[in-house]
Length: 484
Image (cartoon, rainbow, N blue to C red; front, side, top):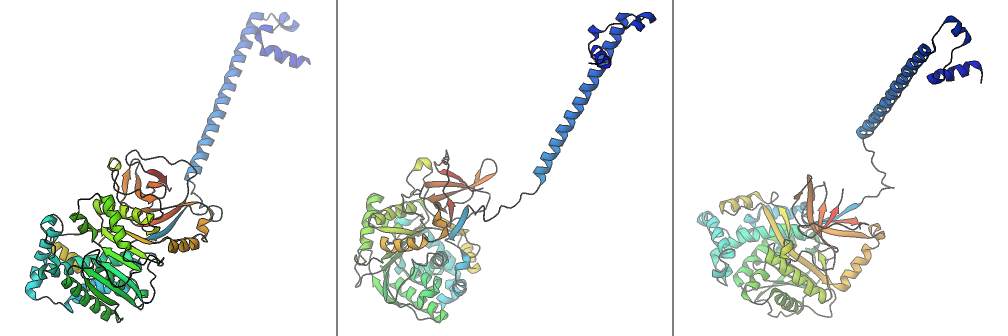
């Protein structure tokens, strides 16, 4: 260490400072030199501390600016190859674009279609809203006082056709247009049965909704206790076929009740809005009734025919939803598979039974803004404003037919990994934190689907099975599935 470094080291430590020979000759005091050196040391430490604080402050500012820049930077879209979509839309029960244009036109002009065979005079037109309102009371709050053959009474039948048949065509045509193609794939000379047919609601709606079936020779047995309603419906069906310039299906009218025999075995059995009335005349538990009704429905088909299909449609109320779920279970035990609206064959999670968790029942809704304006006006005049159309239903096919269809689906790339399919069965639900949820049916049970994307009742989706354990909603017990 040279003399200069030694001097600097001594200056750094005031206690080790000593006077030089020349400082002694000049009379410099040792104490004065130590005080001066200590003051210089304190100044140096303050400068270093100030410099260190400035560097720290600058580093913090740079970090904050970098974080703000990262937050403000637009998120780059993920690569589709590296990040395939998690959610895939499968189908919708109520896609209005699936309804044929000629069917929309006939439904819009349905009043004129009815007038082709049963025109109303000016007085009857003026009284129509009143008659519709009276009939509505008999069908809802005064059901117990309703007479069994109300459809044989001219005024009630006319009100039913001009209002309820019209609304049923709006609902069923939209539903039939969106049912699986394989389910409604009927062959030449197939025998079909519509139980509780009334004015041929189901055959007319199916004829409108599926143009590919208009050229297929089908024989329909239409059964109802009201022969007058069957004749009224026959006249309307022929008018619809004439407007579509198609040959009408063969219609065999059968005056009878559910359970009465027909001359041939049917391969396709339908009934709409029938069991809600049949269930009123029994005191048996719904589980027992569903089992017996399933056996009576199966009796109309050939047991050796593995292509038999059933379509049961009921009003979208809790009691009907519960019955549809029980009927579904009864058919599954008979080796049938629900093809729609169900996305699975597991236990129904929306059977309307568990009241402690809200008693969710299976039903599907669409708004009526696309309904004919004349029909909406007639509803308002009858004080029966209808903003939503709702129904519960199940479409069933023999397990052999369903297995062939599922085999084709497995070839789809969607099934290379394990996916969970579900169908939306509720309106949007407001959740805490400005979130939106939807109840949905799935093989895992009831789901509460949470997403920022607008979903609609009747839509089905497929999503990769979550690899984590889904939490449950405290209110409904549903599994919470986050899509975002």
